[in-house]
Image (cartoon, rainbow, N blue to C red):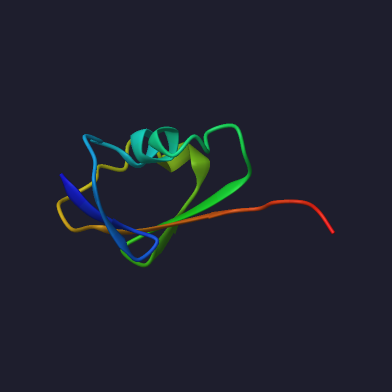
Length: 65
């Protein structure tokens, strides 16, 4: 299914937001997810279904200086 992730088209076989997060290897990191303009809590990821051309923003935090 084609999705827009962080502004770029991605072809993913994901059914839920949780699967999108796992695809990008971010499941064990602090991540904020916005799907079609709505910020989702981590508890919502498993039930939040993705749709073709859904706009998803994944924001994760990195340390350093």
